[in-house]
Image 1: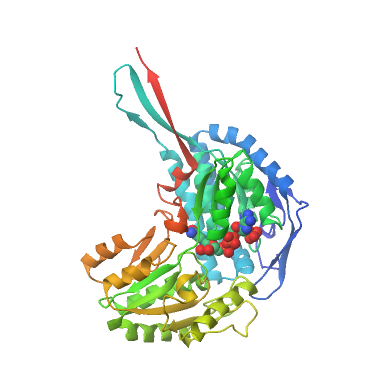
Image 2 (image 1 turned 135 degrees about the vertical axis):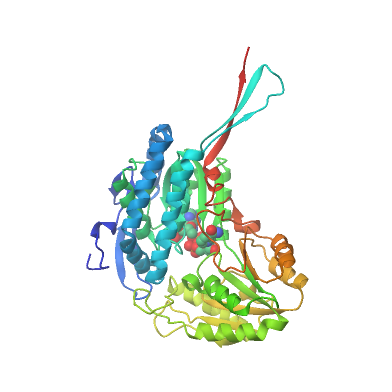
Length: 486
Ligand code: NAP
């Protein structure tokens, strides 16, 4: 399509997908804009509560047939979906960059990363095995089987418009569940493109549904209260996650919550300084700082502080901010003007309280959604940039003296998703790795996420794990059979 230079124009779908039909609803128009240019790239006639209810009921009907399909058939359909996503990765990346802003390179990376979850869970579908437990007496046998939870509602954010969906939908479908997905309003096109390819792969009507609408509370209200939804899997902010947990309580739904983070990135004196700078660049500035596992606070030990900061400053000054679809651009805009304003307010407050912007520090003249890649020094734990998730390309640097102090600073947050540290001391790797209160630790590595490893948080960063052999358990119930024998 001329608009986005797509080879497959039909991947740009502008309707919700319910029970195998493409539906224009009465739930208000959703305009999707390109944050780099401000242009409207699509307008979706969104659905509301009625269509969402219908999607849940259709997903329930479809689930009875889907769970009964031999596991190998489900696995083969997932594999076909994976193949199509990989085949169309360039088009999917273009759609993603246009609606979200990240560079085309990063978008392609996300499509492959997201597809890896489909491939992984197509394989894991065949390994949903049970147990035989030794009985307390010989007159019975004890068996454990695993069964699909049922209809799964999934609500996903805009920062990974493709991968946050496949991380939920692939294990759910592999387990024999069906899915009603509500993507973020800013980025529904990547979700709908996945639905086009799911249909093409032969995934039956009603198994994977996508509802897009102008009112997230209306759609979310149905998904979190409908008795036929047995599980809600959410990725997004901690505030919305807490509200959804409360709403799910009335029908005692299972929940998985992938919520906000405030990752510390600790550099000890004995670290390889170049490797630490490289890790900080990857973990802080990827997706222009808009990932839940982005390092949010750089804690740097006294002895290495100045060398680390000088090299970080140099590297960040070499970034090229711009439209992510243009060659040579290393960092795109933030997802919205509101996001740019919020990041700006946090940086201004830090500077007013004594922090210093070594690079960047303000919004860019490139457009309303752009914020300059920034390094702040002299940050203290009282500042908002230390306490809150920044979700922008801003690295606040805090100086510390001892290992104990670093651990205390790192754990001084209600969040517990990811943490990173750099050291060459083996004993310290285990001491610090075990002491950090979080679900994921990167040791001498700024990139931690892949489909083979468990992803998820502790404390107010959520519950449940995505990816790995553990990820499918979020979509399975355990049933115990006690069989009396003669
Ligand atoms: P958000 O505002 O919580 O939105 C996430 C999703 O929730 C969107 O689909 C949004 O829909 C929906 N939503 C908002 N209000 C709702 C309501 N009342 N009822 C039902 N659904 C509702 O979060 P965000 O700003 O998009 O995403 C950024 C957050 O996600 C950050 O905190 C980040 O750390 C977190 N995140 C966590 C992980 C992880 O794995 N832990 C991964 C990625 C992101 P609309 O867009 O339509 O309003």
